[in-house]
Image 1 (tube, rainbow, N blue to C red):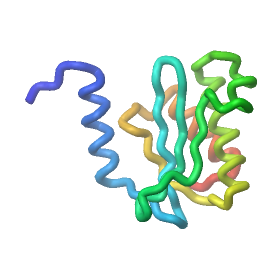
Image 2: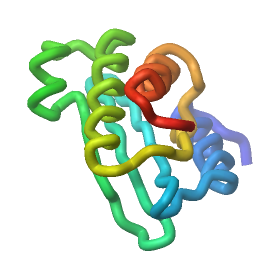
Image 3: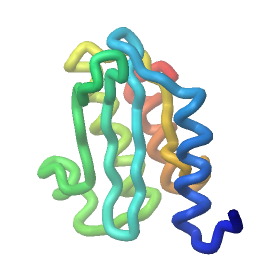
Length: 121
């Protein structure tokens, strides 16, 4: 089947990444979703199929800092906030799931900020 749209390519990459990445209670999966308006981060335990924590650019603490922007600076702010909040919840190490998005720009900035906040990838 020939892929026709950008979304088809993203879904295909996402499924390829998800075959290899699996989160546990000790090392949950850090999922990233990037849209045109917002970014979302979730910490997921796949063994029990539950979300341990969830943050986005709509989270009040992050929303005030980014002021409606969705750029690399906003990604850094979200990554730092998510990393700090995850450490407070007892999450030390994660498995990174870029969600089919290319590891550059906002995704890379978010991952680097989470690492700087103390998460181990």
